[in-house]
Amino acid sequence: MAIVKMPFCFLAFFCLLLQLFSIFHIGNAELEMNYYRESCPRAEEIIRQQVETLYYKHGNTAVSWLRNLFHDCVVKSCDASLLLETARGVVSEQKSTRSFGMRNFKYIKTIKDALEKECPGTVSCADIVALSARDGIVMLKGPKMDMIKTGRRDSRGSYLRDVEALVPNHNDSLSSVLSNFNSIGIDVEATVALLGAHSVGRVHCVNLVHRLYPTIDPTLDPTYALYLKKRCPTPNPNPKEVLYSRNDPETPMVVDNMYYKNIMAHKGLLLIDDELATDPRTAPFVAKMAADNGYFHEQFSRAIRLLSETNPLTGDQGEIRKDCRYVN
Image (cartoon, rainbow, N blue to C red; front, side, top):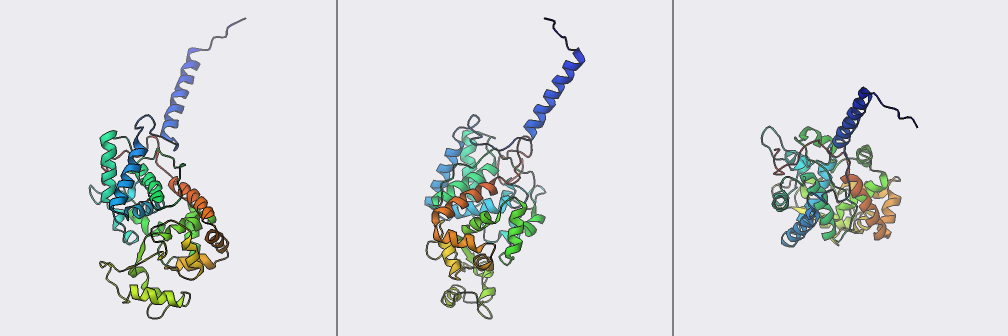
């Protein structure tokens, strides 16, 4: 049998193609389950432990982790740009009015420090955002999610100019919100589920008074409106004062379907809540989630997974920050 010898130039060209493919593949890697299984095997366990410890010291941290994921991922990419402080030519996204009321960023450093002690320069701040949200949801008695992928890398800058356009405002229409989420691959059913995050946390009176003064919004339940006026007794609340109402007075620290029951009874805090319950595009999903907490948890898990995978930096893109507050 004759052996065909390939010309040296062809072999060299073939090897070059393999090298180029390898470089391209690395530079465009994808998220995967248990990304740190070799480089930092205890990474996810450490994050979970830190989230639990912080929750028992400061219960509202769990709500913050959930909100961080939303604000980070809807602005360009899940890349921890939200965590950057104003320094070294970076202007923080936290300065935006859309970031009003966000807090507990200092405890991200607590989580990062624990990871750096175990595996220096290995675990990204973007993955901390995603995994702390996952574990925070569990602390809030929401669904346990085992399908959050990792391997994100951190941005080298912020996107302050884009925040106003990409993070929904409390006065935005439902159509605008649905359009924004659809643009990042989140369908209507998942959007309705994501808004179920309003089942925890609170809203400052600054974002409520337009529904109470000078006259009460007729779409609000009258008795509930009076309760809100007690929480927000002035039409011009001081944003620096602690004046707020819980999103869900019934189960304020539980990710459950009470939110949907409330908005169907016209007891939502925001305009988007009322629209969600009455618009024909979303009302059937609201009714189904109000009736079935299991279904809500299933869709909420799916929505969080979709959100957490929005346009991540991977491979050789971005960097792994040593301190989540600053670029390296």
